[in-house]
Length: 215
Image (cartoon, rainbow, N blue to C red; front, side):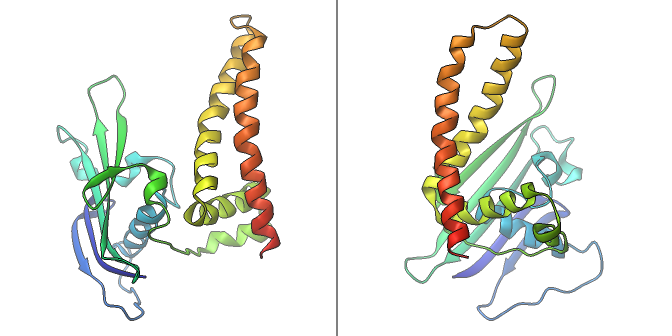
């Protein structure tokens, strides 16, 4: 797999970056705050649709454009996996300031055609190792679950879909539990959300068990 070109617009500290990459191994070096980490973060984001450093998309948009009418960031990579023609992965983050609080829309395209996350994740595979990844051994179980999730979503579409569903259902179920406790909802409504959570949760557990057996 070869990333032929990386293009960034308003991403982190890059107002604009156009970078053609050779096939041989690359070493990034430079002074602090020059964008080395941001370039690696961009590649990781294009591969997984998530940042390894933040859960807030707002932090990814260049601070100088936050006051623009429509602030946005765009990341593009041309990827050659040697099995097919070069494919272009593009992610656009758009800040909508029309409401009382800013909202963010993420659009993912493959060869200029809009796609779902699960259609694109896995086309570019990455392995990122950071100093804080020592927490995989020393830290809490949540760190190990995060590592498994990041790895499995790149190679297993069923796991990616189940994890996406689980993360959508869980807050809905928790909100219902609060309404039930306050007497504003019927406990019978819980059965539907329990079933959805159990279904996606079973796929996640099975995927993690397989992952551990194959280590």
